[in-house]
Image 1 (cartoon, helix red, strand yellow):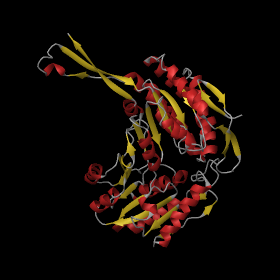
Image 2 (image 1 turned 90 degrees about the horizontal axis):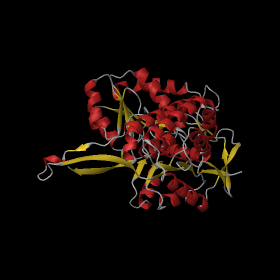
Image 3 (image 1 turned 90 degrees about the vertical axis):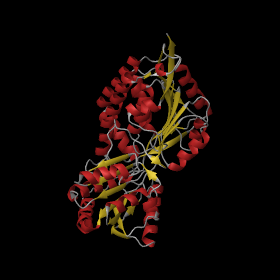
Image 4 (image 1 turned 120 degrees about the horizontal axis):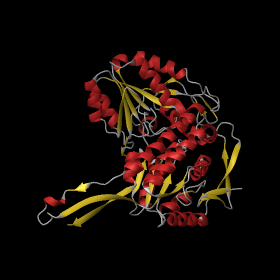
Length: 469
């Protein structure tokens, strides 16, 4: 039976669509197609829930309990993520562990959210005034989430939203709805009252379009493509919109870097989970005098990665999310070759499986360098000076995160100051992320910051209170 999650329970809907095992191509389960009735019921449920606000302590307790339950159900969630997202099992297990941390950080954020005194008494005529701010929830938040982290990226929206006192309507990616439904059950088991989290699933863009423009939604948080992010902003009206969009992460390997560390790290982060991570390594700039020895190390580290069944604990690189996604990546690869790029590590494709691929002689105008490839493909480029590397990294219209490998403190600080991105990671790849750090980008990479302590500020607004004493 096809179902969605509304008002604390599974609710049947008329239509369904299949959810496939991304490696075996077998139907795992059926997901509900939320219709107009389901949308109306979900918004009504969230609105009704907010008439009985949860105290700060209740929010804290629920989020902590949810983290405990997720720890207990760790393998159950990891297996489901592995199957419906095609994520290698060891990475799926890591995602579940990170999800627990996200919940606990959000619980702390609920307890520590605060306003501040506003020094109005320095103004003539305000000597007897006391002013301070308090933070309030916007109301009902719409969370639209991607397939690649079907648990932790969902929690990066749901957990701080609830911590701040917002109800949530969650629209998960159509490829990975099952984890979201399982999370809704877990949150209910943790004591979250009905209506505070509703999950509407659907296979097409119509559901998201209707929710974005719905007057019952007060705040939108979206993670996905830059194109869809622009469409959401265009149709959201005056609703606040938080956007975590694309990237084509630059990583710089300076001449004084630990080449073994850099090669192993960049291979793992360019090709792990088939490169389907917003901050995956895509553009690698290597100082010319170490280019050849680094190239050899990178090829060796990439060849050592295991490609295949994501449920095999040894697998590093599983399938792409769909065969269409793999076909698109393959087309970009072939286009780059036709324009003069050379494959140091040629791509191989079988269905949705694409092997790790390293290209040289790549031009900035090629799609594999200019756009977000979201596939196990990286371009390798030599540079002469650090200024040249920084300039090339900044040529991108994206600006999410970058990685820099160097033993020089001055080079590290220079890169931190001059790279036009939301995060500069020194002696690790662009894809490093701790769940309590501010995460987000500039330019076409989006607006706002995630990380519970920072997201809760985005998901609440300040009200100033002035007392005439």
